[in-house]
Length: 451
Image (cartoon, rainbow, N blue to C red; front, top):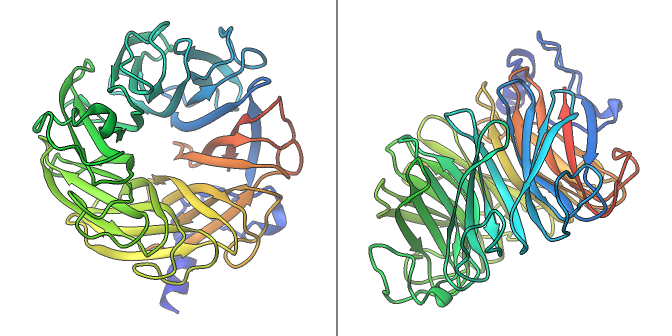
């Protein structure tokens, strides 16, 4: 009863309530808020050309529009200045109404795929992902794939770029600007191919295995200050990072290992959280999950020394309770020492996942991902995979949830709350029916605005 009352009060009092919604008015809750939030889809737009186009991350720009980032293989349609069909970083600047102001690509003749964009303190942006190129905009490549970080100004002009890697597959997934105006990037390192290289405190030390969490601290100009890897003998991959209140860094992702740095494995793959101090020394590491595959993709701070991690879980034991189906969106909250406070499963009989999380100004959390279910916690499915977006409070209670899509596959990875109390979600779409009215070829980038 208390939880129900808390949710009702949140709808009535917290008018910063922002959420994501399907286009069906009859599935929208009756929200009485002072700021006129309707809980409806304002518009859904697709962008791209005849090949694969994907937007994975979004920020609000200084002029009230939006800047989104991902990768494109197209050289036609909405994609400007590209002549080849390999993958390139792709930045698209939108107006508030979702019209393209400009778009630019960055990369070389190999495959270069963007993962995340952040706004920088000087009004520009930093882009992170991975590159197979050693030409064009990419000055150097050490092997198959390298971390590639790119700094651009507010107009999209390239200011500097840096690559980090060894002969194997090294992939970056997330970046933050640190309190000292430098940067921290995270992803995974192919330690077998690096022969133990990549750890500045233990160069040429005993190599752990095939993949490690790899954190690299940079200064404001993108120059390396230190780099350290963490993991065991199997696959360990970091997908997101946050700077902690004490100036350290908390990397999250998944771990398949049960040795070396991983001391409390729960099963096949676990959510794995690694806390390091400002110099990159391991402070603590914790695993969360059950006996099956559990993968953490995104983290957000609650602002009071606690953190919420979202991803998906295929387990129904260990730390997981109330599992719904093949895979559920799984959210957990931990404290600053890695102790589990709560965990929640959301989903249906099929596959449901959380890929992005964003804290609202009111202290709630937008989570976006995708769903193949149409039962239990999921009200409907248009076909294949739909965009799933929910709103939770700090206690993990679901305040609102919705799905959106067409008869083919839709995926969402990035979400933000805007200054005018809207929600933007980005991802990809292969449909041209139901909620998706236009497909330009292959997989398109999709931009969704909820009012």
